[in-house]
Each structure stands twice: as structure tokens, then as C-alpha cells.
Length: 178
Image (cartoon, rainbow, N blue to C red):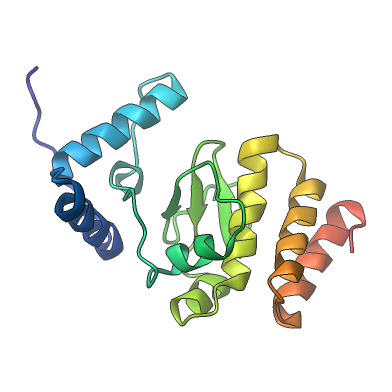
């Protein structure tokens, strides 16, 4: 098979994850990226132009990584990969969205307040946002049920009022949940 040279930039946390994967499993970054792309394309069942952040999603997240911290808090781990998306939100997302999904991958806005708090150690709000999107990946587009799951996770983890109230307000706007 003839290979084409591709160059792109990746986030430092992704680079660190690829290095950990190489050290742990002996898999080069190029091979890990090829495997991730093949797996993604197989899931999508179509060739697509992929964002660099999808190309380099690490298989293992470190506990000091904000997303790793958040996922570690969840009793049920998301079935979809979770990647940092910076501020490149799709048009259907609110400007304040913490996370969103395309149905196969959960994206996290690294400019959101929950992400910033997770960077400092308080990952409860981010964990709940990931749980919300993981619900969508597993069950579909029903926002009321996804918000119910987000609120359940917030309460189960002992979230502060500052994390619960905005989610409860959003849930109330779309379906009367409290």
C-alpha cells in the first residue's frame, strides 16, 4: 500500500497521549492515527474529510487531563471517544455549549467554564456535560432525557448550585424538567 505524507498540528494533550500509547504499547503515532481514522471511517461507513482532532484522539487519557478527570467521575463510561474541540463548534450548537456530539464522537469546548474548572481539578460539571452527550450517542436526540441524565449525574456527584442551576433552567426550557 502506497502511503501519502500528511502533516497537521495536534493539541499538546493529544501528542502526550500518543507518546504514552507508544511507550505503553509500542505503537507509533502514525500507526495509532491510521487505526483511529480507519475505525472512525468504518463507524461512519463513508470516507470523509476529518478534523485533525479526530485523527489523533488518544486511546488513554491521563488523570491530570480535564477530560480524563471528568470521565473518571462517571460510573458509566461513554461509549464514544471524547475529544477536545477548542472553539470550533458546529452551527447548531449554542455559543456557550460545553459539549456536543455528531452521534459517534463527543466534542468538548476547551473554552467553556466547566472545562476550565476541570483543568483546575473540579470536573463535576464537565463530567455531567459528557454524560449528557453520551446519552445522545446511546439513545438519540431526545434533549429532555439527556438533560435528565445530566442533572442525575450532577446530583449524584454532589455538584454545586452554580453547576446545577443553569442545567435545570435549560432543561426547563425544553421540557419542564427540574
